[in-house]
Image (cartoon, rainbow, N blue to C red; front, side, top):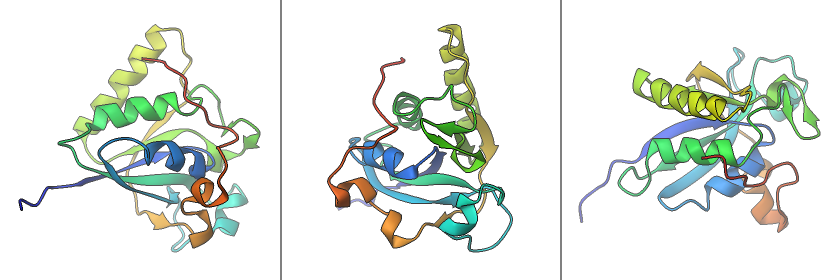
Amino acid sequence: MQKRDLNKHTLQEDAFGGVEYYLEKQKGVKNVVSGYMGGKMKNPTYRDVSRGNSGYLEVVEVTYDPQQVSYESLVKLFFEIHDPTQKEGQGPDIGSQYKSAIFVSNEKERKTVQKLIRLLESKSYDIATEVKEKKVFYKAEAYHQNYYERKRKKPYCHAYVKRF
């Protein structure tokens, strides 16, 4: 059996459980882990991040098979499962830890994200999503992982909206 190279990318968005919920259902996605990225302290906790002054954002790290789904397809899905126009939050969740961002690993990813943002802006969307350099990813506490699957509920501030 041939070993496939899997890629890992970090997409951020408020209430990481909702993004995790939708991305896990995408064909080719092998794993989605909720966590934190963007701040400077080591080993942040939910308590640290939820205060809103740590510099960290709630993020998901996505591992996928690029032979089954492309990075661009995942970024498009990301823009369609949250409101990329809302500044400093998502729905009722307000704070810097909830703002929309995508952390990129290289220039190719940056160009892909920027191309999709320009496309959305050409459709009159005022995109608030920030493009940031990937930093150290810290896995969130166990009770945040697969949150909506475990609770048998649907995300309260995420819904699929066709934008592309």
